[in-house]
Length: 189
Length: 104
Image (cartoon, rainbow over all chains, first blue to last red; front, side, top):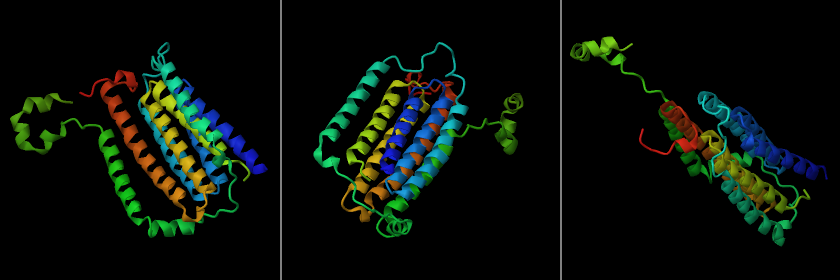
């Protein structure tokens, strides 16, 4: 019984935080509410006996992605706090209506399906040792692919976000270039 | 564990709907990304719930899928936020309805 109460409590809190994350005016508040919603989801994973996934969710989402979002909000400041400017797109009513339709299209069949009303089988164990063994045996190829993908994605993120250096350094290092265009090199700061 | 599986699925559908509404209705590109992350999380929750309530929990398939999905979500968030920052540097705005041309 306490397990169910915990689920409904955490689920209600998580939904409330998700709504706040999508509807608050200041982006910083949105980012923090999203972090809280991710933490609530991690608790739901723990409640579902998936401990490793719960802690991975906490580490990756609350620890890394939320911080990344906060940094992105801080780095793109200036255009969202203008008073009078709308926070939502002009056709937001259509978007919300489509979202409600999607929600109904998922929730009504789920609630009316008798096979989905079943209770959980008792005592599922997912020890970290078994997860590690599976990752090193059956899922070793996907694991390597994820490693390659993460390396590529993070290098790509650095390259995309890197500021293009102004080409003032070039004439100093290359004497030929400096002699070719001396006045341009002097005029640049 | 007397909660029926459908309650988890409805909870995940709620999260998906909220994320979807935010992704299509807000103007800030960062909020669109947060909405996409919420939708991804809803899908992850479905995987975990079906794994927990399924007959072959010892195969750990749902757990594995969610682990890989979290890794992909991390890569997606890093690249997406880097794109937002790069676009902001060029255009001085991160509102998606102002970004209607590809040419810099």
